[in-house]
Image (cartoon, rainbow, N blue to C red; front, side, top):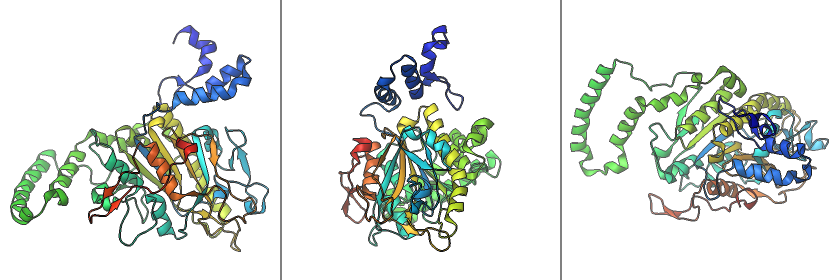
Length: 441
């Protein structure tokens, strides 16, 4: 580094996380402007710096990470606090990197990244059941007995090219009872399900020596040839994907990209930033998977169903969520992946403004919060608001779930107006919502 960098210019740069080199820093720009006596121009500096870190105009994001908070987190104890009000039930708030924008206490590290995050505080749904609500949030559509809709990750994998990815492009870590599915796009777009990244990936390496494994594959080819000549003679092999599935599995087992699942290759200091928890390890794995071309990674953090002892339950869950979510954003930015990666954080619905006799909050789909970051999303703002007295239903500026999906798909460059034909000949779009212009307009 030359001497100029050590002087005034150094204020514009920060040491990259994850062992990466210096990069242009938004905070550095703001410090530089303030130090030069031009504090009045801070809003302009903020816009210039933010533009420097976003993907270029017209270049959409190419990957998605979903932090799925299964069970329905309370908006009042996470992204939409109302301190001092009856509905808060004593939950306090903290300041963030964005003036005037607060989060609930316990999310201090996320608060530092608030300039990258956009909050949708008035999401509305008509589904207050866990299974139906999960389906609605993951697909953008309410359950339909005549059709299974694809999840966001399945749509992304279907619409964007495979490239050189030799491992599954749609991955779910700690999948719950209702994992992301391919729906009418086909089972090939279902999420590949794994568990704690600290453990060896199951069934990914041969259990016999290489020579014996190759001999088994040769024997399998003999059986497969007879099978194709017989039973598949009258079937369309493109629909069964029989041989394709085997070929992909074998290619994956020998791929160097499998190393992306191994977070043990990362420095101990970085692993500590994410938190020594299964969720933290999974979030670090998500970054590594995105780097090798995986299109969508869904990471589930269970345990938000707080009908009893709401405050203590949320305190415990936030101890896992806070460091992992914040470290995820920092690491994506340091590795130059944040501009190309949309990050969605939330669950299937929110929690009631009233606390029940058991000290819990019940299901509340009538105005809850989701967080979006990366991928050109305009961070540092909150869209919509809920009534601080807990009586307004629905909230002003309500954001339907379909608009959330349309916004994410727009950030990913996917045309939501184009019609697709399902296997039974039904024309359908990937979303019937409208992108939120404040976020991607």
